[in-house]
Length: 401
Image 1 (cartoon, rainbow, N blue to C red):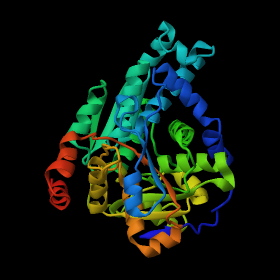
Image 2: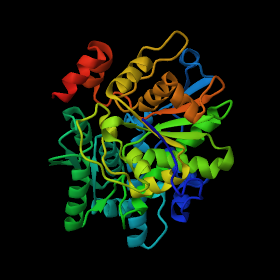
Image 3: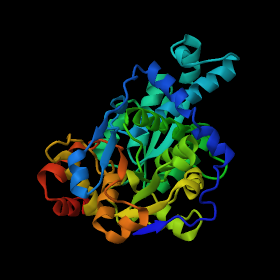
Image 4: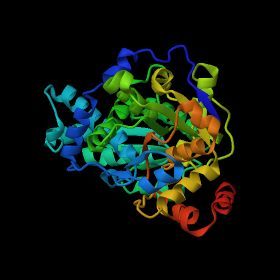
């Protein structure tokens, strides 16, 4: 399914609060954070000429976030970045002086950090990033995981010393429980989704993602004509779309949001003309995208900056993983987790359908930008989906537990 953006705000300027987080200078703070972490080398921008030729496109370039800060996903730029920023802010308030990244190891700053507990809900990657950020800054983490988070992903979060709090139900149930418990205990919530009255921290998380645009644009010989970005609650898609709007204005590429058919809360919001919460469906193999209500900030940005919204099916996602893992001659191999290749899945689906191609203006001159948002964050499942079982069999195994 594809829905063109017909919202009344489409084409309007960003809300000033959102523009403040996503403006042209937004990556500057993120660069300073990465420099302090000793991670000044950008993640790779991979070019796939053979796949582009097969699909009838001029170019496909993939920003590969599978190695970002050794956390396996782009989320390393969001939760961890926001945690460190918030610890520095709290230390500055308590110590009544300016505190920056270089002060993180100062004894008085570490003392403030030790008094702080940060909580969040997660599908896996965001919680891992928040836990890593608290460990790095010297704070404590309480991570709320719902029933669909795999054991391997929970183990990866726990390795950073986080307290794991299990919540029955879905990601949205975990978000609600994290908000309730953190409010009762006086813990700080660092969520990658937003709701009325809670926008500043998710905006900070989104700001962390803007560095991917700067790194990618610096490495490209030509700017893309189309960007396909996957969405769960929509934070990543909105961060990229909003930053591109502020960076390029009318010269920005066409922006297409890609979601699982089974969890398409952003697309359904586009159809309704306002943010909606959708019913819980069967689990999707794209576990990091299994969200049923968009982030308030994300929807506000995407209603202005996204050009189209589309869905991909389970088989589409697994085939994209396999295309990246087993590339055609001349293309590099890319390890993409179940959600990591969803943008490519959307591109491939659009190129197979003449109506979809025409609706979003794809042709032999199109240059595509994608983000591999995660590596094999559940290595056993990755092996089964890509290397062992045929995709359809592997999917039936997944949804049956």
